[in-house]
Structures are given as C-alpha cells and as structure tokens.
Image 1 (spheres, one colour):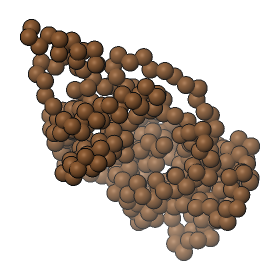
Image 2 (image 1 turned 90 degrees about the vertical axis):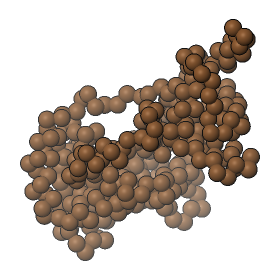
Image 3 (image 1 turned 180 degrees about the vertical axis):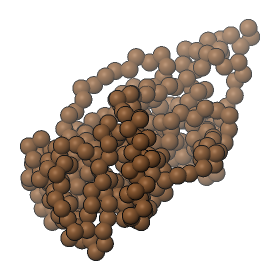
Length: 326
C-alpha cells in the first residue's frame, strides 16, 4: 500500500502489470534513455525491430561513456518484457507446403545429385519481391497502444538471389519496370545485373539470358537448384550448367534462399535500393549464414543433438524469433 502511487504510475506508463518485484537491467540509465527514444519514435509511428532496439541501446551507451555495455539478445528480451512491449508477428505460407513431397525429394533425388557435384558447385537461386519503399507491417509497440496503419507502397522490384552451399555469393540480378530510370542518370556502372519489363517480374527470356551469361564465366560444371515455376521451365541446354528442379510447393521448406527473411521510404530511389541490397548481401550475409540455410533446408546432414544445444539461449528467458533477424 505504501507504494500504491508509484505502482499506479507504472501502470499508467505501460509497465508490465504482472511484475511482482521491480528489477532493473544491467544499466538503468541506458534503459531509461532507450525507453524515451522508443516512446518518441512510436509516437511518430516508426516501425521498430529487435536489431534496431539493440543497436540504439549500444549507441546510447557509447554516448554516455559506458563502453562495456553490450545489448545482447537476452538483455533485449528482458527489457521488452519489463517495459510491456510486444511484437506483432506476420504469418507465413508454411500451411500450403508439401511436407511429404519435400521429404521424399531429400531422401531420393537429392543424394543422387549431391554425389555428382562438390558442395562448391551446388547453388540455389530464388527470386524475391522487394517493396523497397514499403514500411514493415509489424513492429514493436506498447501492449495497450492503438497502432496506426498506413497505406502500403506497392512499388517493387524483383531480386534474383544466388549462392553456393559453401557460401559463395553471385551478384544480384535486379528486375525493374523502367529500362533507364531517372535515378540511373550519370551512373556508369551498377553494382548488380539489371533487366527490365513492364511488370518488374521474372520472365523466361530474362532467366535464360542470366543463365547464358553465367555459363560464359564458368570453367567447371555446376548445379543450380531452382523451383519449378513457369519462368524457370525449359531452360537452355548449356555446357557448364545443369538445372536441378525442386518439387512443387516446397519453397518455404527446402529452398535454402528462402530460409532467411530479406528486407523503406518515400525518397528512396531504385538506385538507393540497389546499393542497399548490394551492401547488405556483401556485409551482412556471411558464408556461415548461407551454409546454415542449406543445412536448415535439409541439404546438409547434422547431429540434431548438437544443433539443439547450440541453439539454446544462454538464460532461462524465452527469446523471440524476430530478435534473430539481423
């Protein structure tokens, strides 16, 4: 009762009502500043992710002279729980996938293909739509906050991502609508391969040309694994490239390039988006990450017991999946 007014104030400030003991984190000063920043940016309806929260916490700590502060995943999880901050999780497409077909392909077809090629010669290629001016549909917000929606920007490009089992990355193929966008003016060379059509979608012609150009660069035989969509069917017969088709409706299950999510603003141009995805591909996606995607898709056998131990958090708090998306 003697702490009644402080408790009521905490409830009004959106503190967690289920807490029985008031505890602070590793540095209360940093957390207080982070809370003020979070409150401010949410009032501006900014979309906030776990990695961004951790990054801002470390930036604040550095400015405050706290060089030993590290915003770990466990710390971030506990801070979110203390501040009663929740995450709106998006739904995927796993329910529409063919689990039986994926398992059968991995057990019967994949061993035969793997026996013919070295891991460095086995690639996976997959397209992803990039709405490079769109804001995230989900973000962190206070539990009792009335989140405001916004009109989704539908300006998009298609990005073809390709990497080998050992983590070797191939340059992106980007497909836009315009052959010569205004933002390309005075640009002598793009950091990616660029094609265009009226829909900014992949076509059989673009895909075949991409394979032709890749084949010219090769002095060895390789096996790109791709899905069997209409634009991939009937590929050209090439000296150094043999296409391996994945079974239908298994993209989210055994497509390695689909195992990690890929990612907004009115003034962002197509050229800005190209440079951003190029920088992210080179700096933020490691060879180990790519190898783990092939492992998660089932192309590399591993000891489940060891993997489960490595994946366990270092504390007893449940770590939300979205905090890993860096």
